[in-house]
Length: 239
Image (cartoon, rainbow, N blue to C red; front, side):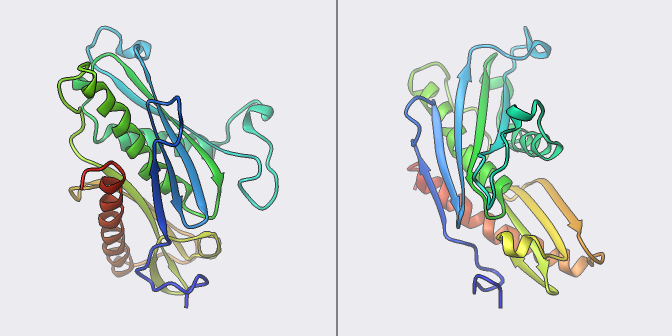
């Protein structure tokens, strides 16, 4: 039995609440159980120097955890004067995931900045951030289409992410902190709504895992992503 009482294939209760930030072009509060991440999308009419005069746009992300998002207070990274390696790795993952489903040429020379702020952490903050950020990005781009600034939505698919792992020898879906901290294998799957693989991060925290365990985790992830895609579409009013 999992600590939460869930079945191996059961996710935590998921909520995607769009439009929660008044001033951002797009926003979403993503809740995966007790993990809550605020995702906002801000549009800038400029691109990084390496893209100037190319006609292409850019999507980038920043990620951070609030001081009391965990059991004990953690200093803000700005106060320390530098970001941790973990923070940099996660925000790069979020950016890569969103760019994978965005037509940067159709976006034109503008940049979308995604900000992901972890309000409360109980495992899976990066997967919640990616899932919620897609909703925020879609909202921002839809506003540009509605205003006539873009002829069509410059996206070729949706993207979402979910964690899997092997806990006490059993592959399970959507780990919370109690499982994540003791898992023999920890994995994050980033997939498109159409089933394409954007990125897989899988690590043996104890003994190496076998192909059968990986295949089972992938199957669990695909089922989880299908549900998250359905919830993304519902949050955006596409169903």
